Image (cartoon, rainbow, N blue to C red; front, side):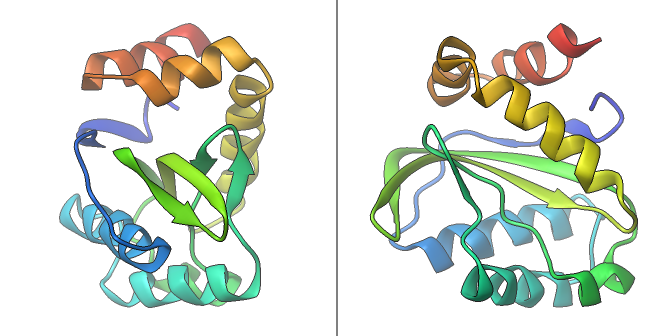
Length: 144
């Protein structure tokens, strides 16, 4: 994940009044770092309307639809923390790991995230992260 997650794509003090607002913010960060075109944000919302991206332990993984791959300039991740939580269809989401993948790279990313989230202690560390270094240590350094 080291080549996918840059420090400037980690934003831990975010606020969102709704799941849609949180997804839009995730997409905006992917646009800001040059990973996707603005159209990708709508594809992320479309994906969420068809199936929830909540994966448990207070974490959601918003990403685009299969048809949105042409709007992806490069594979990347963005990690956004929502300390106040976001109501995600009845679930309390504290962290969003937004994924941009032009190919099948998201499958490996999802597998690595699942490994982290299956460990309640690591999931708690992700939710409690206060700095970009905390996130990078957990998602990148411990995986190398």
